[in-house]
Image (cartoon, rainbow, N blue to C red; front, side, top):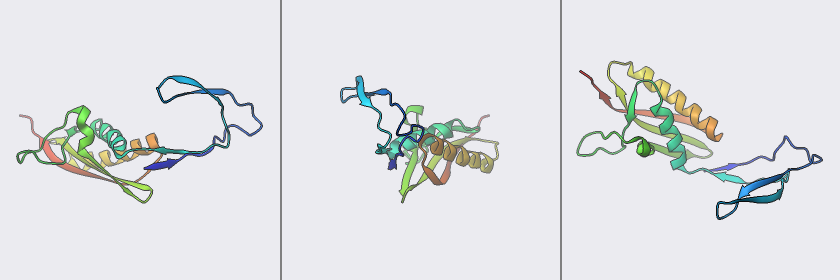
Length: 149
């Protein structure tokens, strides 16, 4: 996914530009010269990066026990470790828009529809705020319920 950047509109062409530092190929910071008010470029965001943001947002929702793997393992739902939670999220690009599918495990005895709706809203908001992308759809697949005795 490519996000076009806009020229910095806070700085007028007649304003004095300050030197900036940017990392070079080795990762070290160095002076890159004067900021050009007319520059533009692109930022590429991988589907995995979007999935990571979406998974983190879903995990923080009330009632979510964890993110489920998209594939069953030995016929059972597998709860992913937090560092692997992006594997339970599928990201598709439709033109310049994003469609996200999240597989979750929810706590039993909660209104599943309400929790799923909250996940949809929070994931959409988190991705749009973090990346400036337009998320057209968030699908929540409830893979399992955790039952406590």
